[in-house]
Length: 199
Image (cartoon, rainbow, N blue to C red; front, top):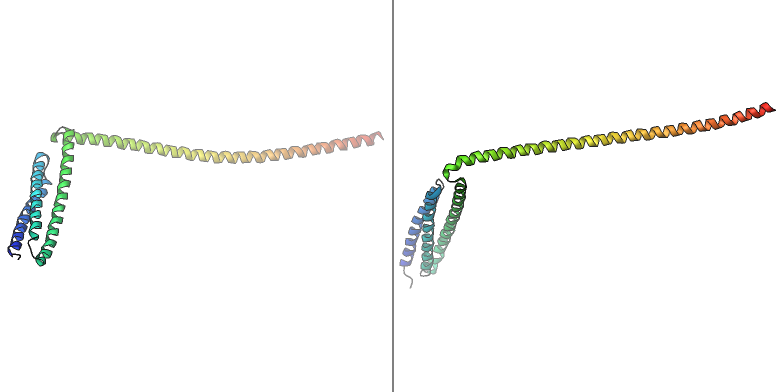
């Protein structure tokens, strides 16, 4: 027969879990305002407590097996909530560790925290060079666009001039043909007049 003490033990584990959860949360919150070794130590302590919390949840899961089905169903829902809660704390821990590593790498590249001003100066210098380079590229792009526009306008003007020349050439050819016809007519008239004069 299931004893009522099983539920009491489960609730005792719950109290232990709640206490360690509060401690984990406080450590993770504190790490957000820390840097360097202090932050690493805080996160290591939080990691140990997360392991302890996982063990407590395992004990709670084992204890559920000793409970009546009616109590087990109700407490299983609470246990699932604790597991989801602990998983969120683990994710927060991973993000904090990732931030800590990034900060550590940055400090190492700078030669320590005292190099921050050097990084700021170097970053500003690099940013200035990048902005200048971007401005030069933009200016070159504008010049290319202007040159392309001028080329298109020149091409249009050239096409217009060629059209005018073609029209003028046709007029000259027409005028030349008209003059040739007139010259031929004059020759014929001249020969006719000469023939009439000999009679």
